[in-house]
Length: 160
Image (cartoon, rainbow, N blue to C red; front, side, top):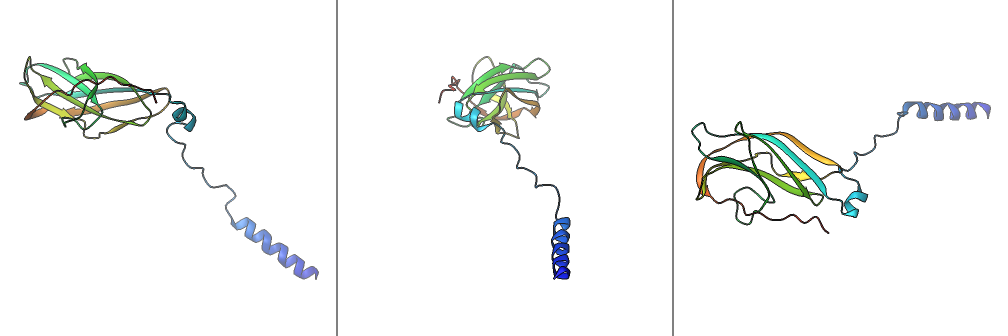
């Protein structure tokens, strides 16, 4: 009987020792807490980057943060900022958690449609998180294309 008990205890101990002693890793936390999302706390999104225009382009470089794919009908601008002479830009929008954002830019002539423009290839970006949500080092080039219209401005409502 003692031998059986000793064998059984040895088997149990051997099984316990062969298992990993550390518990499995917890799943990654959501990008925003459910409490923040449920409370309707908006996301404050900051976007920084650089647009490169053709050397012979004339006009002001404008950067648009939009609620849809760049240069498509139905897309509206949530923010419209002027890039510096060197092409650097900073834009900020306050949106509902999870809002998808696109970044577009164009050389704006004094009148008429836009003929030199571009879009951030890695879009859409998700406006989600607590505190300041930042997207840095966004970079893309502008090129001549079929004329398009500026996206109309739309006020952002962060209400539920």
